[in-house]
Image (cartoon, rainbow, N blue to C red; front, side, top):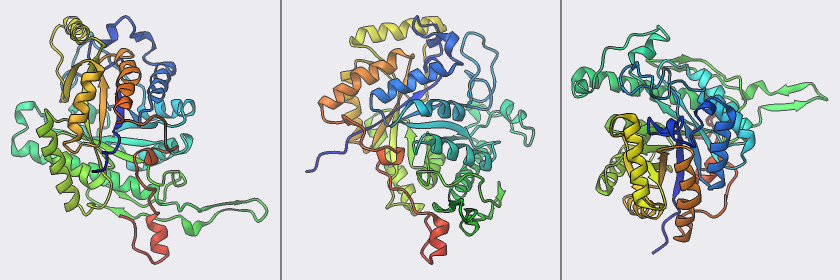
Length: 408
């Protein structure tokens, strides 16, 4: 039997960490949260640990303890820097790690997003991605004024009206990704001639109108940004249920999922693979990463005590959409390898407190996985697609010009 493929590892960076009281830790440095140095330090630490990628959280409204509306709390971090701009700022300071900002498809024009992420791919020499998300928050819709969103509460989620709203938001997100992908292809790879002697900078025949017309968007194209170095930067999405699983299966290169245990992970993977086949993508590489919030220390009791202290500062126990792991790096390695047997190809770890839990990942978990021959000992590629084993796709419009079947 062949050895299993090495794990892929990502970290999700958010403020001072995923615990709402993490900003009050002694090493948190909350005054630095809105500085480039804060983010640069985190990403260079992640790269030192040979991680595949980092994701940057973002949104269209202030953070909130309420998933469906703004809150009035003043004891938690509020306010963000733009995730795409942060990624572009730290890109020149790194060489290998993938940079994946969160972008909100709801209320955001795909043309703007396509050129922003294409630019990130150019300035990072092929290490850009995006994490697409949707929002049903009314306060965020009010920032744009183009649509109204009905009130939505957790108890409404099982109703037909809520199901229709969620389905529409994710259908819009799928169209958004499709427009973005077509715009990335709207310049062929050799569209730029740059011949000073003849005065020809560009071959206009190799720029293409995408002419997308759908329920949510009507976009002519072409982009104003040349095709990204990766051809198609990596698209990812977080998914908790059937509707977002279909978005992952149809539109993404990576899906982040939140299983409760190994059996649940196996069931989620099976559901996504079935949806992938139904979307006509059965032969394509689609990674499924498990999300975990982690509180790590070399002693499990110390990790539990630290989490309890943070809970006391917050005034309530910490909860999350993802499973919360509290223990040692060796215990976490055991869990990751067990979950891999359920079909997960990697994991996105959410550090409970920064920088503490990030350094426990890079300096303790990674060496533990390396000792078990489950993680790389050096970067094997210079692009994010290369690290993930994804081929650089052919340009769909160049294929049509050549009389070939267009890329999907």
